Image (cartoon, rainbow, N blue to C red):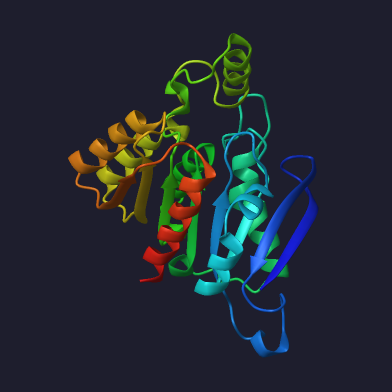
Length: 257
């Protein structure tokens, strides 16, 4: 297993950004592996985290080696993975520029059946935004404690200052009021249902004590009512790394089948 820490200039962001890449073999292009193209998981962090967070707080490196899958962990600041109303183009960067960069330097498959995306909290929303905008690119998507509708986030902060910081962040990214149609997972799903488009497999995990439990129940109900086949699991847990470490292992075990 090898961990690569990359920093490169993004034309969409107009500054240097970071991405960590786990390759399950001994190197990026080892002689014994030069003909192998790895399956790849794009793994998205939550609000307040960065490209280092999954590696520091979970056993993702062990899981990647065990399942022989590459893992791409980009930095996305507090972007909610959208092209923000303030001008930062994280969605364009993540869906266009980053995959090209990663495939240029690492032996990753570009086949949809070998490509997966998952994330926690804000990254769970980002997973829905990306995976449901380009369903043809992914075999499966995993949402862990997902902020399915960031415009409807429950008030979970203890003080007014933190609440205002979150609100200002949301206003700069998704805008004030309701989500734009292109950023709304419900809108995207309804669109593909009308068109009869094949969707990636959806895996949804949520802790029963998580402050986003209600939001995830609403999303689960929507999937059921629209006959969208999705794997759902809940267990005792809150919005923390203990839960997400279990969730990402479950997801990798499922897609390995």
